[in-house]
Amino acid sequence: MSDDRTKPEGQLPPTLAQQVGSKADRKLRAQRSDAHVWFGLGMMGLIGWSVVTPTLIGATLGAWLDRRRPGAFSWTLALMLAGLLLGCFNAWYWVTKEDAAMAQERGDRDD
Image 1 (cartoon, rainbow, N blue to C red):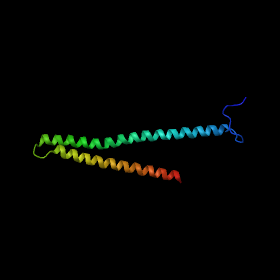
Image 2 (spheres, rainbow, N blue to C red; image 1 turned 90 degrees about the vertical axis):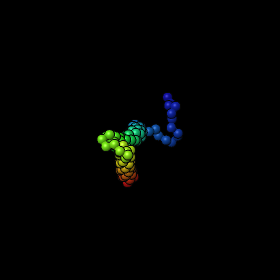
Image 3 (cartoon, rainbow, N blue to C red; image 1 turned 120 degrees about the horizontal axis):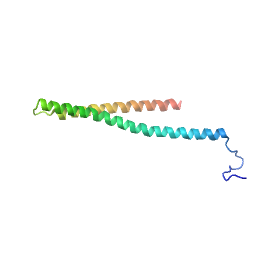
Image 4 (cartoon, rainbow, N blue to C red; image 1 turned 30 degrees about the horizontal axis):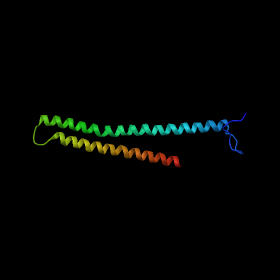
């Protein structure tokens, strides 16, 4: 009986080892692409929390200072802005660190 999926003339069908190897390669590629998706989502969460946390701490501390020492100067706004700047710097630090690690990994893989 002839198989409908015959190879062109002169080309041998793949061996079992070749079939298993190709399936394993496809599975590994799929796992790596899934890992990149989850890594990206995790990085977005890390960046979000690294900005939000210092901003909220600054706003809370500022509100507490405004209640304790009322005046013309708003500690809430000042410390919230300081927390936001600190959070943005923190996010920038993490992104550059991860970018350098990914670039190094790509460089190591190319060698």
